[in-house]
Image (cartoon, rainbow, N blue to C red; front, side, top):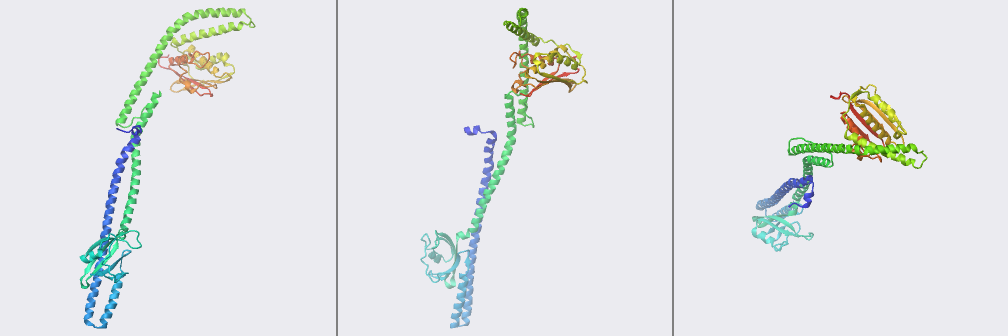
Length: 510
């Protein structure tokens, strides 16, 4: 069972957690084993070297004693009396001084005892009986040396200046001519000083090596895990975009591994879903159009006639009353709202039953000039300055003049409605890309909030208090029936730009 914490971790963290121990643990084990073996070899080497030094010093002392004894025997045969005593005294004193001055390590030294345990040569306690000397464990190590005559002995010894006993190792050999035992001793910690230095160097070198290799391994594992998880992170990001409604988002497909195959399959699935959504939207629109057709027919039949009667009587009463009459404003309001109802019915009919355009080659600049002259006198355009910038090199365009007039008037009045306090509207024409022309309507009005831009072409969506929400829907429908495009760019407080793109000579239009 995996822990909940591990389950919540991201894939990259899981890879690091699983792979790093596989990399670091073998390195640690190898480093520790190597360090242990190196340390043991260093101790063995130092121990053997130290023992060799002790053996060498013991052999050196035995050689000195043997040489002195031979010289003395030879000299004694040639002299007698006091001369023999003087020779022995002077030569033996020089021999003892030479032996006592010989040091082993920092504190080690050479000493000689006879078979009774009396020190014959010693740096400090010469002539002292040490046969009953005991080490820190109470062992009579001198008696053991006297009994065995030759060998190695290791014992703990604590001097008065030591805080605790220190292990001492001694090489002792028997010198038969004088019945002496020659001993060469030193403390083990002095032997192992260099070994301890080597051990310390090995330890810190191992630590540094582990840190360096660990950091390098971490970086490499992180880099590899990043390479492995980056495509997955990209896939997750694309999935989030699609979940938010961006059906154009696609996964990047590279290589031929399993992730690439999955990305390709996901892109195909997304494309199918997008097509299905478009088909559903198209079917819904067609259903809506069919419903509107039925509705508009009934509405036109059932409402237009009563509206005509209401408008007729309202006009009759309006003509009978003076403007000072207190009832005049009510009659005027009835007439205005009846006209609004009639316009709604007319828009419904226009949207539901927009006829296919009757195309004819038309001078777009002249058509827009006529529309500007007509619409500039509209009440919604008070305080609005209309400027034109027409490209006179444009060719005639196949279009339905009446329908495009409806489009242009709708866009101009929308711009005027966005500038209640006045402003400027620029209407321009210009060549477009790939055999098209463009008509541009740019105002300095209040603009459209970003959240509303995607909804403005939906039927019945409006931000106006008295709007029907069908003006832009009809406009787009007319432009699309001309095989053109309509594009709106807007920013709140900075105006709106509407661009119409119409083909110059689309196949089948003329």
